[in-house]
Length: 216
Image (cartoon, rainbow, N blue to C red; front, side, top):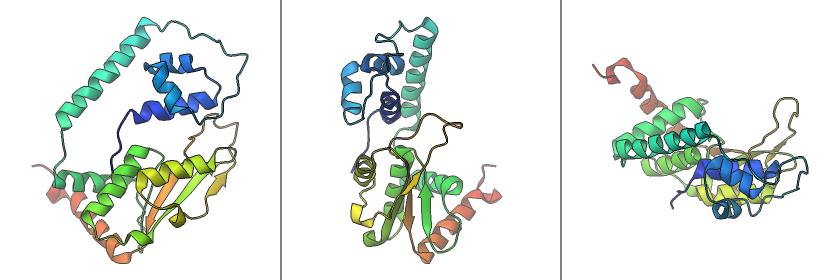
């Protein structure tokens, strides 16, 4: 199971489309083709906003420079990191879990709205630990008014966890005074209830952050 493509651009495109941006506006903002945008947002409900301009302004030289620099550093990063070894991937997963994983004994749980990190976690969990797939669970946090079926379809495809193993979602009511944009796919929490697995993860994590592991 693989996961590629311009994930960040796709998610941002879907958010902008939900805010009534035109396809051309989105393409210009993200520096991608209109055809790509059309594919990414085809299932996002679009309600035209007459207050938005129908044609995007020509991007400024500073904006073009910014996009060029971001793309250059992305390609530089890919070349520098290359393909991770098993040991490097193990350490990556432990670092992710140290930041975003549950420390409560009895379950391995990881929550994040970034699909790349969720995919990295479930791939890592399956690679380094003996997992009973039937015990994997996912609970989705999704704002009211967003498409639950589409979000569930996105996460089951990404994680490989069947919909029948999804817990009832939590539908949050967005506070308009705090934020306007929402994650269209929500924020999933992947849970594997197993004390032994959790203790193994915590043991490895403790070894990772002890001073003896640091470079001299």
